[in-house]
Length: 106
Image (cartoon, rainbow, N blue to C red; front, side, top):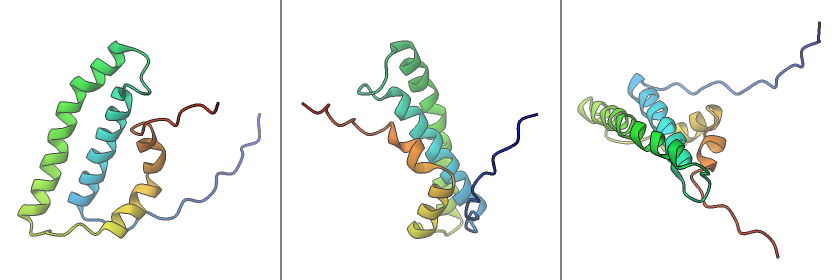
Protein backbone atom coordinates (compact mmCIF):
# COMPACT_ATOMS: atom_id res chain seq x y z
CA UNK A 1 0.00 0.00 0.00
CA UNK A 2 1.39 3.39 -0.98
CA UNK A 3 1.26 6.11 1.67
CA UNK A 4 -0.90 9.00 0.59
CA UNK A 5 0.63 12.42 0.20
CA UNK A 6 -1.33 15.06 2.09
CA UNK A 7 -2.88 17.65 -0.19
CA UNK A 8 -2.56 21.30 0.71
CA UNK A 9 -5.71 22.77 2.18
CA UNK A 10 -7.60 24.93 -0.28
CA UNK A 11 -9.18 28.08 1.04
CA UNK A 12 -12.92 27.75 1.46
CA UNK A 13 -15.14 28.77 -1.41
CA UNK A 14 -16.63 32.19 -0.66
CA UNK A 15 -20.36 32.38 -0.06
CA UNK A 16 -22.12 32.70 -3.41
CA UNK A 17 -25.70 32.86 -4.53
CA UNK A 18 -26.88 29.86 -6.53
CA UNK A 19 -26.90 32.06 -9.64
CA UNK A 20 -23.30 33.18 -8.99
CA UNK A 21 -22.27 29.55 -8.64
CA UNK A 22 -23.98 28.71 -11.92
CA UNK A 23 -22.30 31.73 -13.53
CA UNK A 24 -18.86 30.54 -12.45
CA UNK A 25 -19.52 26.95 -13.51
CA UNK A 26 -20.73 28.05 -16.94
CA UNK A 27 -17.89 30.58 -17.35
CA UNK A 28 -15.24 27.97 -16.57
CA UNK A 29 -16.89 25.45 -18.89
CA UNK A 30 -16.80 28.05 -21.69
CA UNK A 31 -13.16 28.87 -20.89
CA UNK A 32 -12.27 25.17 -21.02
CA UNK A 33 -13.88 24.84 -24.44
CA UNK A 34 -12.35 28.03 -25.84
CA UNK A 35 -8.98 26.76 -24.65
CA UNK A 36 -9.53 23.55 -26.61
CA UNK A 37 -10.47 25.60 -29.69
CA UNK A 38 -7.55 28.07 -29.40
CA UNK A 39 -5.66 27.69 -32.72
CA UNK A 40 -2.40 28.69 -31.04
CA UNK A 41 -2.65 25.68 -28.70
CA UNK A 42 -4.88 23.08 -30.41
CA UNK A 43 -3.28 20.32 -32.38
CA UNK A 44 -6.27 18.50 -33.88
CA UNK A 45 -9.11 20.01 -35.89
CA UNK A 46 -11.57 17.33 -34.77
CA UNK A 47 -11.06 18.10 -31.08
CA UNK A 48 -11.41 21.82 -31.76
CA UNK A 49 -14.56 21.15 -33.80
CA UNK A 50 -16.12 19.10 -30.99
CA UNK A 51 -15.29 21.84 -28.49
CA UNK A 52 -16.82 24.48 -30.77
CA UNK A 53 -20.00 22.43 -31.08
CA UNK A 54 -20.24 22.06 -27.30
CA UNK A 55 -19.53 25.77 -26.83
CA UNK A 56 -23.01 26.70 -28.06
CA UNK A 57 -24.75 24.84 -25.22
CA UNK A 58 -22.33 26.16 -22.60
CA UNK A 59 -22.73 29.74 -23.85
CA UNK A 60 -26.49 29.34 -23.42
CA UNK A 61 -25.93 28.17 -19.82
CA UNK A 62 -23.73 31.22 -19.22
CA UNK A 63 -26.37 33.53 -20.69
CA UNK A 64 -29.08 31.88 -18.60
CA UNK A 65 -27.09 32.28 -15.38
CA UNK A 66 -26.57 35.98 -16.06
CA UNK A 67 -30.22 36.39 -17.04
CA UNK A 68 -31.31 34.77 -13.78
CA UNK A 69 -29.06 37.10 -11.80
CA UNK A 70 -30.44 40.12 -13.63
CA UNK A 71 -34.06 39.06 -13.08
CA UNK A 72 -33.40 38.52 -9.38
CA UNK A 73 -32.12 42.05 -9.07
CA UNK A 74 -28.47 41.06 -8.79
CA UNK A 75 -27.36 44.04 -10.86
CA UNK A 76 -23.70 44.04 -9.83
CA UNK A 77 -21.01 41.40 -10.06
CA UNK A 78 -18.96 41.24 -6.88
CA UNK A 79 -15.68 40.89 -8.72
CA UNK A 80 -13.39 40.40 -5.72
CA UNK A 81 -15.55 37.58 -4.34
CA UNK A 82 -16.01 35.98 -7.74
CA UNK A 83 -12.26 36.22 -8.44
CA UNK A 84 -11.55 34.48 -5.11
CA UNK A 85 -14.01 31.74 -6.04
CA UNK A 86 -12.39 31.35 -9.47
CA UNK A 87 -9.00 30.89 -7.82
CA UNK A 88 -10.39 28.19 -5.50
CA UNK A 89 -11.99 26.50 -8.54
CA UNK A 90 -8.62 26.41 -10.36
CA UNK A 91 -9.70 29.15 -12.76
CA UNK A 92 -6.16 30.36 -13.43
CA UNK A 93 -5.10 26.98 -14.79
CA UNK A 94 -8.36 26.45 -16.64
CA UNK A 95 -8.19 29.80 -18.43
CA UNK A 96 -4.48 29.53 -19.30
CA UNK A 97 -5.11 27.69 -22.58
CA UNK A 98 -7.21 30.64 -23.80
CA UNK A 99 -4.06 32.78 -23.97
CA UNK A 100 -1.57 32.95 -26.83
CA UNK A 101 1.71 31.28 -25.91
CA UNK A 102 4.86 33.38 -25.79
CA UNK A 103 7.19 32.87 -28.76
CA UNK A 104 10.16 30.60 -28.14
CA UNK A 105 13.37 32.28 -27.05
CA UNK A 106 15.93 32.76 -29.78
